[in-house]
Image (cartoon, rainbow, N blue to C red; front, side):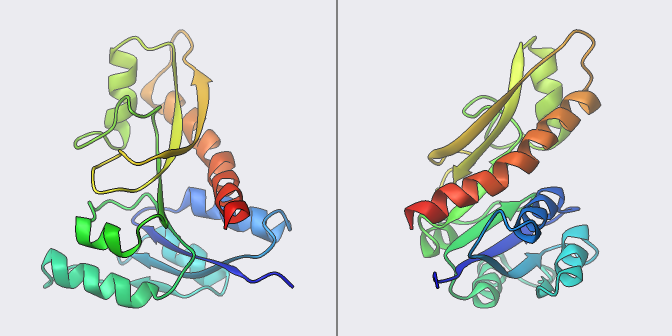
Length: 195
């Protein structure tokens, strides 16, 4: 029997991409992949409930009363030893110290075709608004390794979508999210296959 490929997840939002990962695991499409813990900096984040519903520890790690260093130490202690750390809508910038602790084991999804529309200030609807403002003909999503710069690490997977006449921020966001839901499990399988 193959060794389990243990993943931890950090998220701050609803966890739509995490649900897509769970769905593929449930369907038998990700043999060996085992989510061991889900952590959030938001007490009522939907991603925590998704974890609990799947009998995976879902832990709120309260950032209040911590400086960045002690908060990240608490995260590291809660994550433990994993093969991969997946950022799924995690709305905090991680320090170089944290990134180095999990060097080569942290991935993130970003709703643009990096390097376009990445870096500080580019998150959420701001990205889709900028893409439409600039008259781009395509957008998409990127799953990449996390390094010490924001939205910068080596690209694992990109998927593209055409921007149509009359596209809105909401319609583009929905199309990109559909790509993310397919892409995140695919990226995990690619990494698992190399381990």
